[in-house]
Every structure is written in C-alpha cells, then in structure tokens.
Image (cartoon, rainbow, N blue to C red; front, side):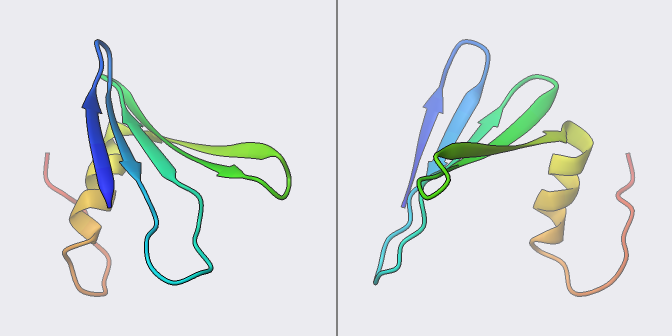
Length: 76
C-alpha cells in the first residue's frame, strides 16, 4: 500500500508494508526539485535513516527496476 501527497515544494510517497509479520516500518520518499530523500525510522535504535539521491541517481533507479541484469548508462 502507498500514499501520494503533493506539497508546495515536494511530492511525498509513503510506502506502507502490509501482509504477514514481520512488517517493516513505513518508507517515505520525498521528491524535491533537485534531490530525492528516502527515509525509514528504526524503532530498535530510535533513529531515522535517510538516504539522499540526486535526480540522476533517482532516474537510474527508476530505469533499473524494469531492466534485466547488466551495466547501463541512460542517454540524456
């Protein structure tokens, strides 16, 4: 399950784990004009982990989800 929200300066996608236990914490993907952040809270350690991607890295990730094994370079 997921939700989409569109704020003034970003689009926010929240991925919610469903199904049999053990379930993982929600993943929040925030897409800004110049970067993308991926966050997930870790209740055991009491911290939120954040990964920041450039838009180029995010576009590569999107493309990689639909490609077979291999090494690729997207044309600009």
